[in-house]
Image 1: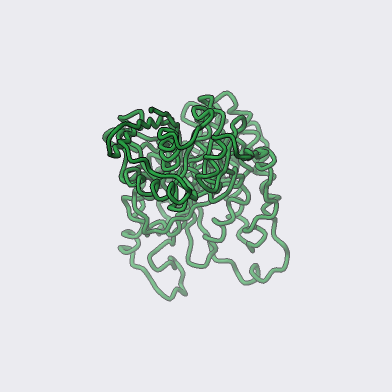
Image 2: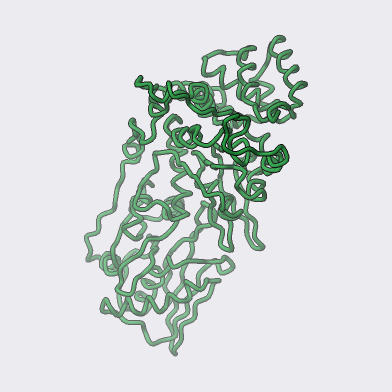
Length: 511
């Protein structure tokens, strides 16, 4: 008897339906074909124990299982439940009604209970697209899959619940989630709030501009000046995610198996990898590609603390994703693309000792040590960072001031108003939502300068010896400053402020 059961494989952030064909014949043997990996080949032992412990048996016949399309690599233990149901139906141990209308996925424990799987959301989206009626999966993953409307999503604890439902005996109810209600549960009281930061008004202004335009930013200052404290508070002033952004972000975290019984993500991610991170962990990859930190930070913030401590080759692999806002990982037989549209926030000390130009510093660094330290960060990478700002230590008078600083909620209102102006400006352009994403053509269209502004920028370009890319960055930042002022055109004061935020381009910065 031949039976077909349906599962799914995830490549990148998209799913592909897998047809599991189970054929029962005279003889003895267990043959699994269709490019399964070791975890799938070992499934026969888990399936045999799970069936026995639930009153069923592994049939003593020749079992041939094909996972089609046969030329596509399948990986992971999530096919256990699919294979087990196929074997039970093919051996006539159960009668399954409407088996072809469901996608079935789950990893089996030896007692028949189910363990969580990765990529439930992309699988559910694909199942709905292809017209399946329902989707069986472990209960731990049900919230992320139930985001998809128009698909019956059943979260189950063990294989027996699936068997009872397919035989028409069970009373399983599909899980439903009001996506919009889930999405609009926003936090108006963030854990890290800008009201905690004393002083640093100019840095807060920089953070507001960076958040409004989605600009990359680097903070340069001595230890204890507040660089990390400021960076951790940046997500609290970013505008709320749109529903589309929330779905994109949730898909990536679903594929990486990081959701942990969470439905739709409504908070922007904040990722802060350690400086010992490898290339693959940062950009993604591996023999079975997985998203890296830059994709996990999609639509959020990637914070690199102590930037020069990261290996130079690790930083260099970020150059292309920073420009293209996606990363493509190629292998011999397939290629996957992960989105990586994130805000880069970096911090660094100005010298190895951290106390550059401080007459009271406990340690001094020689000019040679400083050059070697700063040379770890390449010019092309710095060019891709729109805003460079020096962070100075806060004086005692500011630290001891009892006056409450401006809260993140108030700053976020201005940021959101600036983003709304940008959304209207770019509504005709696909994949462009804010100023930092503008390409050269849009910069020429939306960043038109008057004569006074042109002269100011020309002088700055010649004196600071700026690159063409830095020129574009200054125009983008100036456009964001104008949007925060609700000004239709860029004026010289906007250009002057934007030029200030290129500290590391100044020839005299080390002098």
